[in-house]
Length: 398
Image 1 (tube, rainbow, N blue to C red):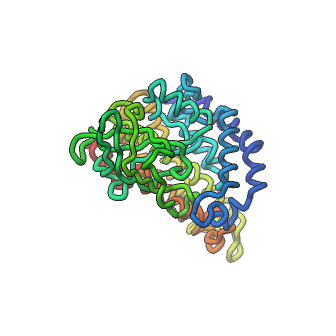
Image 2 (cartoon, rainbow, N blue to C red):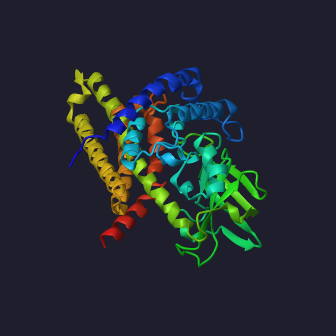
Image 3 (tube, one colour):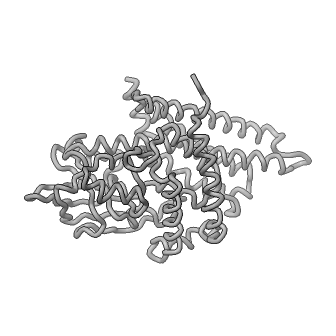
């Protein structure tokens, strides 16, 4: 088995480093208030919506990323993407996470950018939604989670009923990433079947200015970029048959396929973040002295770092194996859940160990550790909780 990184991943990482140095770093220097200790106060206004200056930075980086060929690089060449495989994208994601918090997260667009689900678009939908999305002209959001249904998303309460040549959608979505700024939403609603059925759920493309579609409360999430997540209210929201994405009643499997790839990316991002925190801690352990010698010479510190380095390597190999299986058309449901489960734990452990090694210094906002400590916690929840991953692994075994 070849354990070397694909040559394409190596090339993309190098190109990304150059892109960040030339296009992103100058913006981080110019707008350092959005990255400093008070970033949460600077990024949003009194209604917790991101301020125009910050939105302009995100949009500027998105356009530059489109021009450089990074935006939508995982999409097929036929729609203007780079046709990058799952393994390469994950390795690049690990590399991008191995750095301090910054504006580089806008390069790929995140949940607001192109997604393989939209390959189900018909010709008209591609022209109206997918093409401008690939060009960075518009953004989207993935509206699945509801107030009473997160892990059990197929029990959703949102309903869409057929009236003539229209669908009437009623319901509520929560914690939807990029909802306050999306030009259209991919809204999942039950169109047939019984509560809990995997079938009978349909995805609709809903424009943000559609009557009955409204952004509700913008959530205040721990450790994440402020002003990013919000509720969506659907009150007799009418869309035409031409707004159905893919086939009626078959939207849930598309959602799960998207989430499966997301789990790989979470594990890869966890490895990158943990590596960043490990390097930071090793450097500190070499320089910080107590009782006459560096703290890194003490087993209480060095053994924690040794355990963390081992865990990083384990998760790295696990997510890469899962990605390799997926790229080769093999079933990898168990491995992707294992990678996500262990990746989430790694992200939290790394932040905790880094803070412990740094002592009081790690607890202060002058270093990025406390922000990573807060942001790591959500890894155990989104894209499937720890408990869901364990259930999936158990089902695959039994």
